[in-house]
Image 1 (cartoon, rainbow, N blue to C red):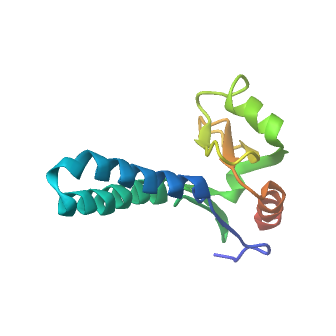
Image 2: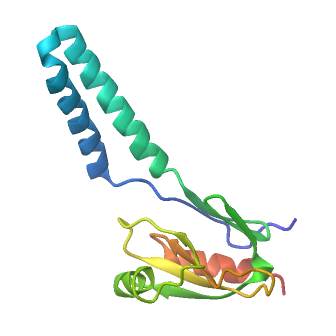
Length: 152
């Protein structure tokens, strides 16, 4: 397994506002449990905040990596040899490929809070997936890593 000339790794973390929302969920739980006393209220604050924070963290823990001769996007692992041309999508292009241009057979690693994306054609005739749609904050860098990591 050869190492990619341009290694790439990105973690698609949840936005900061989601952590505030996690705290507000805890406050809501505390208010619900307020009639039962101070200890249940504090437990509701801690427990509600913790559960909401774990949910936000698990949703935001997905990673995109170019490792050796493979692209790893979330749970998917695709050999670079099976990928075609990569198209960098700005905010408007990404919105179009998420909505009216989308193919239901495509692999989407979609995070709506990330405005830019990369669309990569799948050239493997055995694979019914026409393309990969990857939400990424650095689509140019990911496209470059895919180009340089492909076998000659």
